Image 1 (cartoon, rainbow, N blue to C red):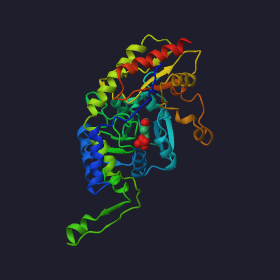
Image 2 (tube, rainbow, N blue to C red):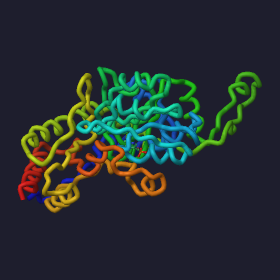
Image 3 (tube, rainbow, N blue to C red):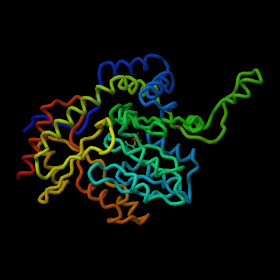
Amino acid sequence: MRQDFLPFTRPAITESDIHAVVDVLRSGWITNGPKNQELEQGICELTGSKYAIALSSATAGMHLLLKAMKIGPGDEVITPSMTWVSMVNMIVLAGATPVFCDVDKDTMLVTPESVKQAITPRTRLIVPVHFAGAPCDLDGIRAVAGAIPVVEDAAHALGTYYKGRHVGQGNSAIYSLHAIKNVTAGEGGIFCTDDKELADEIRLMKFHGIKVDAFDRENRGRAPQAEVFEPGFKYNLTDMQAALAASQLQRVVNINRKRQELAMRYRELLADVPGVQPLSDPAGYGFTHAWHLFIVRVTADDITRDVFMSELKKRNIGTGLHFRCAHLQRYYREVMGFKAGMLPNTEFNSDRICSLPLFPDMKREDVDDVAAVIREVLAH
Ligand SMILES: *Cc1c(COP(=O)(O)O)cnc(C)c1O
């Protein structure tokens, strides 16, 4: 057995990341400033989006999006239930109705067919999730969406490409810089869009709804006063955080390549292990996977996923669970009346998935350890 505990994840922090943060601390300007700008520029260059707005979290971006689109009572938003609860909670808090679409059983991605089935005359927005770092079929989803806006939950997908282009292009997309994500600020998020009006609104609303009147500046020849145009929120990112993410962003290609190497090793070692089944790649289009997560389904009939996870832990292997489906969590069951049986592929996976250790500082031998432990646990 391993002597040391192998966690499910660990942020990839280098000495240069640490220096970048310390430089901000010494600079005299620690909240949003030049490092936010540098991060936003870097994100635009990587993703090809015209505008990027740094925020305190991806969840904040979802909140601002719903506000900017004036989504509220009577409106429906389509999103998978196999996701982190952020978007679903924000939809409910806006007074709108989440409409869940099922996912493909083996990729856990929403499909154009599942989105199409969920569309009604009340649908105002579609939010697909690029699960684990693999892209959804964006062209297919766009085609069924017609005039309904598509905003991508790209929390797992910094460095994910669909048909040779970074995800998010042509739509808006929201990235997360949470501690476990491929590039992190500790906490943080980025809203990306090509729509200038939407970008301006998100930027306004992220900081109290305050701006300087351009008319004042140009026509009255006096120092303009910033003032509230509409009540906004406090969702800005500090420069300490932005500096960390900007520093990591320079290495995103290497970070994701390392993740991919480890993922391929897992696939090789687990291919002939009965009782665990890794996710499949999406079929029918070219892609680059960001490998945010390496997920297996525990399909053996003599061990549950929860026992599997605790047996791995006893043997010094940490695991994660991404995610327990949203629609069967207490509030959604009891208050909103969602029931088991509504989303068969989502529920199948929700009961069986487990995320194996995957982070850039892991070694090939660590993957070998995990695979050996999995074989041992399933053999007993
Ligand atoms: C992490 C995550 C979010 C939320 O990101 P925060 O930055 O923590 O708000 C949203 N959706 C998915 C799929 C995520 O994994």
